[in-house]
Image (cartoon, rainbow, N blue to C red; front, top):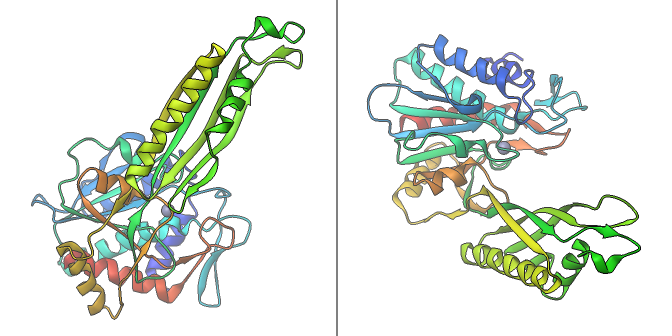
Amino acid sequence: MNYEIIKLFKQLAEIDSPSGEEGNVSKFVFDFLTDIGFKPEKLTAGMIYCQTSTNAPRKLFCAHMDTVEPGRGIEVIEKNGYIQSKGNTVLGADNKVAVAAILFALKQHKLANTMPDIELLFTVREETDSGIQQIPKGLIKSKTGFVFDLKDGLNEVALSEPYISDFVIKIYGKASHAARPEDGINALEILLGTKEELSLGRLGSETTFNIGIINGGDATNTVPGTLTLKGDIRSSDKNTFYTHQTKVEEIFNKCALTKGGKVSVEWIPYSFGYTHNLQGTAYNKIENIYTELDLKLDPIKSTGGSDAGFLNHIGIETFNLGYGVENIHTTEERIEIAKFIKLAQIVQFMMSE
Ligand SMILES: [Zn+2]
């Protein structure tokens, strides 16, 4: 662990921060920024925002501080040129490699007196329910943003990200004794009634619909009066995404009405999709920067969401870039040290370009 950036990463990774419990790592980031002379701000839920100067910031660098489970008691080890966990937890490289690279790059600029006018955002609960949605309106002033939360290749950039929304569907019937079913309205029958029209799983090449959690009923001898369904819908096509939501509501409402029950449907946006313009100025700029660093930018369609989705949604043209981490979200998560060092160079260079 000779490299300073690896030491910094180790410190970050060994602070537990599963989604929703980012307090200690948030404090570490806050103190780090304060120590190198900035005035970071604490936002809702422990998110951290910082501007490097009083001048108008030109770009935003954003990373999330939470990790997935098993993510407690992480021990970082070095093996065959890689950084990995001891094997019983994730490494937390998603996304602390990016947190470390951003902090490290900033420190280098500070030491060299080359600090660019940028803004930084460290978010929470990216992995679960997109905590970034709680940042104050108008907080981010830059027109362009960068997130490093994509894939193991350092040269990849997300051309698009899917639209994802969680949902909660509540079906209200009326409970009755199992011996007197005619007195009740069976919520399960309402659900079964949707079968004809409602498809599950893959709805098209770009769209999926999943009911992942089904809860309901009170007793073996009671007709279930309520049912709760939770799941998600995802699509890379905005139109299909919203059209299908309307269709789901219509189908459930119709079936409930037929049986004399009621339904409520709540959509909880998780990821805001986007598609970048490969001909655009911002994209060309990144392409040039990567070329200077001997990397050929490779645009890919991402199947997952990231903080870049919300930032694009609020009008900041944000790119999600590859950051070198392999086997994300598993206990085999790792990053090659050489790639990590290269990533820090990329970030440092991008800050000033
Ligand atoms: Zn991530």
